[in-house]
Structures are given as structure tokens and as C-alpha cells.
Length: 214
Ligand code: AMP
Image 1: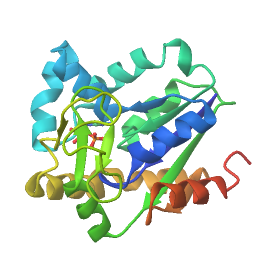
Image 2: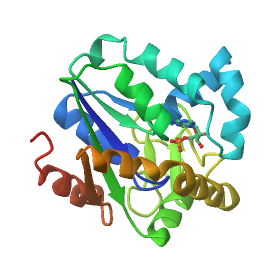
Image 3: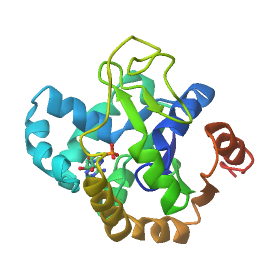
Image 4: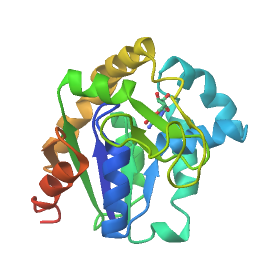
């Protein structure tokens, strides 16, 4: 079992890069934010617990996210490997993740880094499809028709937490609660730092240029 954690602040491009790698490596991309948003949309018990935290840009309690993840990885497509976007977000969640796998399973952290200006620009120009979740960037990955998804013709919207105030809150939460994870995986020698400046192709090229599994 191979577990790749796509790690980095909101707006770094984890979803975009993850979708490309998922197809190339034939591993499902599990986005914790999407899983939670689905739970909120379907008003599940996890969704009801998560909603208020998400609206404020705060982390949802660990047991709620862990429950959603444990259910997801029971599915057929997740037996050989998974790409994780947005999990783990703290050390407790990293330990929870290890508890799901054995000693022979490899967990790698891809640490994506970019400047603050790049992040804020990517988040403010991000639009997502309300129907299929596809992600656009008004400048770098624009839809063919304004406000309409290329894939399913769904309506493109701005996430309600992609506003300037909530963006700075989310970046602050990332630095405080999530950065210690880099140290945690560094000490295990399973963290790899990748520059996420430039377009998706540049980032993928850099990832494929590393010896991930050695
Ligand atoms: P994202 O789409 O990854 O930016 O996540 C959106 C929101 O979902 C975050 O601001 C948190 O409220 C919540 N969330 C996503 N992943 C996690 C996680 N691993 N732990 C706690 N909360 C999470």
C-alpha cells in the first residue's frame, strides 16, 4: 500500500496536482475537504458536526474527519494506494493515519511550497463547479465559457471560504497547526519538498523527478 500525502497551504494546488497524479498513477485522490463538503451537503451526522467549523475556516474535530476517512478507504479503489489531500492536518491525525496501515506500507509527504502572493492569488481566482467539483483558476485554468464547467456544464462558484478574511484565517491555521507535520515526517525521512510555483505541468515534472519510493 502506498500513501502519498499532498501537503501544503490552502491554494497551493493540491487538488489540481492530485487529480493529474491520480490518473497517472492510478490511485484515487481523496480530498478531505470534498469528503466533508459532501457530508455537509447530505446533512450526515459528520456533516452536521463539521459545518460550523468549516464556515469559520477552523479545523473540524479529529474524530469526525477520521470517521469519514476510514469509511472512504474501505472502498475497492483504495486497496493499492491513495493520494490524500487535506489529511493529516495535525500530528494526532498523522498517528491516526498510521493506525490504518501496516509496517510495510509507505507513507510519503509531498511538501508543496510557494510564496504568499501566489497562494492568495490562486485562492481568490479559484472557482469550483457546483455539480462535479472540477477546479478552475480564472487566469491559469479558465473555463471555456464564463461561469460554466467545461466537463458537465455545471455552474461555477467561488467557495464560501475563499473570501479574503477566511483565506487569511485558513493560512494562519495552516501555519500554526499543520506545519509541525513537516518536522514529524522529516524525522521519519519521508518528507519531500517540491516548489509549487508555475503551472501544473511544472509541478508534476518536479514530482516525477524525485525518487519517491526509494
Ligand atoms: P480544504 O478544502 O482542504 O481547504 O478544507 C476545507 C475545510 O474543511 C477546512 O477549512 C476545515 O474546516 C475542514 N477540513 C478539511 N480537512 C480537514 C482535516 N484533515 N481536519 C480537520 N478539518 C478539515
